[in-house]
Length: 168
Image (cartoon, rainbow, N blue to C red; front, side, top):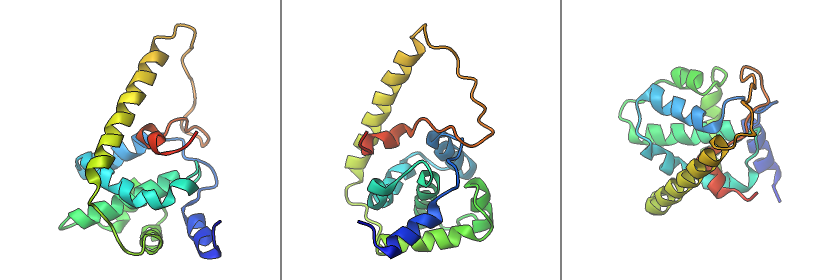
């Protein structure tokens, strides 16, 4: 059961509608724009772990983005300014600082790295499972192309590697 403080914290991460961009593309955009290695994603999962049972379509992008930013800043000598990061994460001006503080409070200001190998292996396995599902989907002649307009809210069918960590 969520207490009032946790509920209030999660509301800061919630959007009125899910972002139309799939989470995988959202993460890839972050990595590309900051010229980062994919290995940073594994470290972000260790932060997100605290939120696994409370992640929804409405808060997943902000939760993952904030965790990625915290790890990026942890490993970077000269991180990009928050104003630039907010543009990458589609956040309002000044929003990132508050999200970082709330997330750090929720994890008690502790970022742990001792079981990163297990996380890496889980993500690799999840990626293999996703590749198999994509191949099955692409080989199915009965399925027509999806003409979804991704410029409007409402389309977020896949969490990519995150799906390995959530119950169906």
